[in-house]
Amino acid sequence: MPFQAWAIPWLGNELPRAVVGYLFAVACYFTVGASLLMVVLEHRAQREGNQFLLSFLQDWSRFILLMTTVLGLVLAAGAWLVAAVTEPAAVFVLTRVLFWVWGILWVLAGLALCSGLLHYSGWGAVAPGHHLVVGWVMAGCAWGSLFVVNGILAFLLDPGAWLETGRLLDGFFNATFNPSLLVHAGLALGIGGLFTLVAGAETDPPRLRSVLVRTASWFALAGFTLAPVGEAWQVAVMPPAAREALFGPSGHGPGVFAIGPALAILIVAFLATGPLVRTAVTPRPLAFLLLLLGLAAAGVSGWSREAARAPWVISGYLQVNGLGPREANAARVEGFLRRARYARSRTTANAAAGEPASAGQELFRFQCGCCHTTTGVRGLRRIVQGWDVETIDHQLGRLEKLRGVMPAFAGTDAERRALARWLASLAVPKGGKP
Image 1: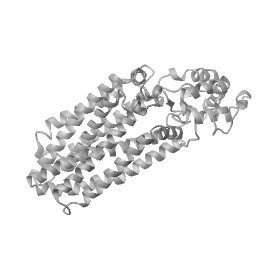
Image 2: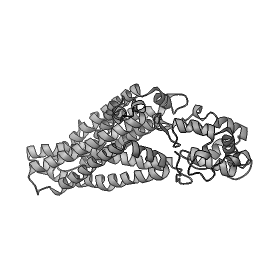
Image 3: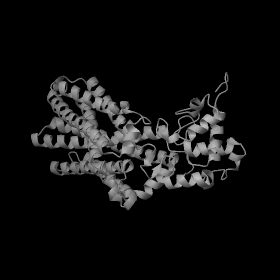
Image 4: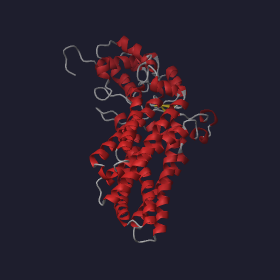
C-alpha cells in the first residue's frame, strides 16, 4: 500500500537514505572489525606483559566506544527516521515481516553496547582475565549483529522459498546468505584493520608501532582478500533477475561493480609491499589513503547490492513504489488513485478531463517520487525536455524495459496519460528559463 512520503524538493528521498545508510554501514563495519582486533591485541599484550600496547588499547577503546555509541547508535536511529519518512511502505512491511529478526538484532546491539561500556570502564579496575572476557563478549555480540544484518540484506535480495512457504527461515538462510556473509565479514575485517592502521602508524615507541601496523595490516589484507571472493560468489548464486538488473542492458552495467574488486586488489598490493614489510616506516598519510580506498570499496559493494535488487525492496514481493505484484495488477484494472488511501484525488475524473495538475502530480508523487525529483537529483524536467505528451506516454508504458531498472507504471491508461501530460508541462519552452 502506498503511503504519504516526505522528500527534500531538490535531493529527493533516495539520496538521503543512501548517505545515511552508507555512514551507518561504515560505523558497523568499524565496530565489528576493530572490536575483534582490539581483543586480539589485548590478549597478546596480557600474554607478553606489554604495557605500551595495553596503554594504547585503553585509549583506542575510547574511540571504539564513541564510534559505537555516538556514530553507530545515532546513525541507526537516523536511518530508521529517514526510511520512515521517505519510504514508509517499506518500513511498514519490513517491520511486520522481520519483526523477530529486528528484535534479536537490537538485543545483540544492546549487549554489545553494554559490554563495550564495561570493557572501557574496566581498564585497571578488574582482573585482566575478566576484562578480556568482557572484551570477547563485546566482540561476539558485534559479530552476531553482523550475522543478523547479513541475513536481513540477503532476504531483501533473494527471499527464496519464503514467497511460497511464508517461513521466514526459508528466506533468511537463502542461497545468497553465505557469500553475502563473506562479503560483510571481509569488509568488517578490512575497515577495522585500516582504521587501526591509521591509529598505529607513526606511534611511539617503534616496537609498539611494529605490533600495531603488522596486526592491523594482516586483518585488512585478510578482509580485502575475502570480500571480492564473496562478491563473485554472490553474483554466481543470486537470482537471474538480480544479475540482469546489475549487468544487463537495462541495468547499470558491470563498470561500477568492477571498481570494488579493483580497489580491494589495490589495497592488498599496497599492504603486501608496504606496511607488512616495512612496519617501522609506514607513514600515516599512506595509511589514511588506504582507509579512503577501503571506504570507497565498501560504498561500491553497497551500491552493487542495491542495484541488483532494483526496483524491489523485497525481491518479488514489494517494489520501491510501495506496491506488490498483486496491488500493481489491481491498480492497472481499477485505477491507482482510487486505491491509494493517502491520495488527495481518489478518482480518475481529473485525468479524463485533461487536468494533469492534480491527478498527474499525485501519480508522480506516489510512483515516481520514490527515486526522482522534478529539477534536482534524477530530475525529470531534464529527461523529458523536448518530448511531447505522446512520447512521454509511450515511455511510461515501458518503464520496466528502459535503462535503469524501474517498476512498471501501475494505473489505468487514463492515469498514465494524465501523468504524461503533467510531465510534459515540466518541460522548459525554447528560450525559456527553468
